[in-house]
Image 1 (spheres, rainbow, N blue to C red):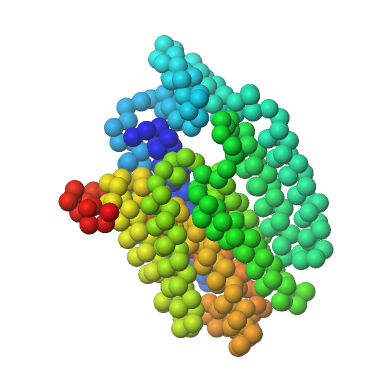
Image 2: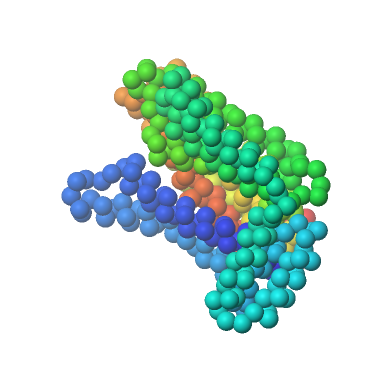
Length: 391
């Protein structure tokens, strides 16, 4: 397995573990148990059961990452950095890997590998432009945040966090040396869908919060940071995705088809009046597993299945988040109730908090990412005669 693929699998494994931890923290935050210590036991049991798929997926990714890898830590670090280099600088990366073999002593090897990795990730030729662009965006965040705070205080934390993250990711993306015109590598359809999804998420969240009386307009800092981080990562994956996520057109098309199917299932569940029973638990699991398994079987590639998982999660969550808020406004105008459970005692802005937790945290952590990775593992191991049926 190539170094770039190993790096991507390592990131996915870290994300799986982080989502499991985030799911547990969110459950404790959203639904605090009774004041006595025994009340925490059911919450811990539920968290362990729901986070188990994420931990299993992390184990699958780590096993694929470490398999047949006999390199030590410094060589692995330098190999990752060299694998991220553009084609024109691959010779330099290969030369540094060969030079590392002549370095003796663990401390010297770590120091040499870290220095080369820093030069590969942040080349001196990048200039000050990327840092200046990122710094300007970060510097403008407090000012824009104050302006937004006067108009809609509930979105102030989100605005500042989002601009800071976008500025940092912009500097990182522009600092990469490029020998071709800067254009999204995810394809025009994914780019349009992703940008439209991010814009719709921000617009609809602000619109729903405006419907509340001023005293009740609230979006907790915890959920505001989650929403900002998720949308910033979506922008990064849409506009400047790692090349390891753009090698399969089938994966991107399958991800879009799965996203549409997720949206249809959600709207049907919302109109039926029970989202928890008809959408949250089962459809994301089945759709993500089957989509990743089919693409992995078609290309006999675990990596292709993982790509399908990523694009399904990105486009699917953006679509469902927008649909959630649209349906919430419709139900509030018709019955004055929340979309999740039909409660009428809470302000309509609570729908934004519900959508952030269930769509951006729970559904990816429970269903889309872990079962997509499992589907990729199953599909890549199917007998050779079966993939012909799905080509």
